[in-house]
Length: 640
Image (cartoon, rainbow, N blue to C red; front, side):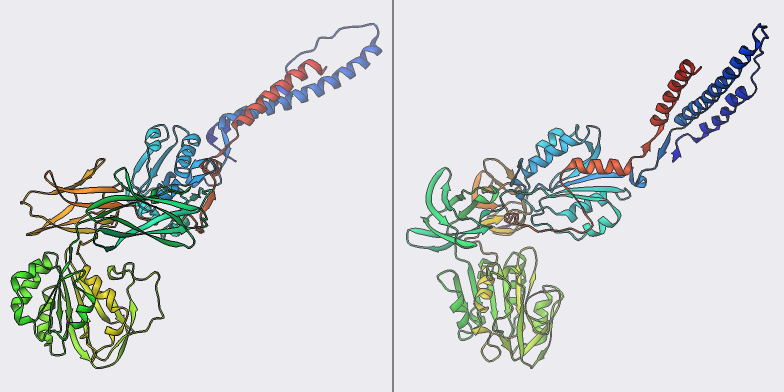
């Protein structure tokens, strides 16, 4: 037991006073003479015994009364279990991602969590609250009640580590208690375990009652027929869903196609025919779960064939013509001697196919082409001089070829996350028929590996700036040097390299993916393009090129929808944006070590109060004082 004012305990010496009064009473007795002395002596003996007991009772009662009163004023208390942390700040990390749209026992998980905070937090309880896209520092429930009720869903996943970094930056020296509210969908954290070692971390995981969900994951153009465009709608099922799903395509408010989908497997596709014209539309389904992934916006622009030029001999270019066909591309197949340098700037992709030498004039033109957003594919030749090759590569950074190795090596490693292999593989594979090469050049530099040999060296690598890409092979692609032409990998590799930065049908983007878009437009020095629809608008990051504009969307827009790209008052292109689908799977089994799991905010507050608050005892001593006062009165009245 400790005392808030221990100096008052010195008054306990005052207990000597009633003792002295008891021991040295100054009262004098008067003698009275009575005739019957014997009777009086017996009465006197009994009275003296009774009076002595009463005096001792009064003495101890007054001693206890005075002692309790003094101790009460000294304010005794028992130290709290965790008194060191009683001044900790409270930080709430609230998940407002789309998965929190799911309904629990008392409604939507996000809205119920906010209501729980408002109901259980005292109006003057100070805390900080961070969501995916909003921060409230050092506030109380009364101050931000309206702001909390207006919190909307964010199109991004709940990044706990990012929020922890924000807190550490804002409050570098503070000791903090963390209260995390999340359904743990798409949840991951590397910092939370470390934070838990020195801080109290409470985790409330609201549960959705229905974890079954259907999401529209993609819409793509399959083929353009004479009068129709055929699109494919891809749907994904999470959990069990046996009911038929109605699907409709809306252009503005008009239904232009319908279908009924029976989700018999995890992924189903639906093919629909639409009028062959430039169109902005929305695919919609109806299920009984999350709503954010039930709509998918898309734009089908005017068909434009990407322009690709092969520079090499007709015999060596033959395999390229089988992959990059005139049905989908505007192809120019030319030898170096017949190359029209003035047409280079108009191309999307240029493939240097086993040129014996890359002239200085071509190097200069290709550097300008690359800086304006063009793509270059370099396939070296056995006849290439390393000095000439490295002179070309050095114009794009510190990248060089080393000596040639004459040994057979297998191509065994694929960078599945590279854009060239987007939507090529359903899952990462490891047991495919490995292509090989009989000789290769060693590539040194800062290029990103796409395909690698079993020894870790690059067979295909890429170099890129904000606009263009350079793809570099380590060996000639002919049947004397490699069997890569017979590998299934060759088609997606060259097809997607030719499609890079070509906007033929890619006018649909994902919010937050920081994708780019290249449009044909001529802007003056201070002129910019804007992107807008009926409800919002923004000005994206953009780079002005001679005849084009490179647009980077960053994290914008904030809401999915169909948009127009405007130059002044004229629409020069149309694009669509959709929310990422990584919040669609509500089936999670996340377990976090060293975290205190709770079921509501009241439990957190009660736990902190119990562990951080000292047990005050002065009230009990004051009650004892009153009790002993009452006992004294009873003794005075009833003890004779």
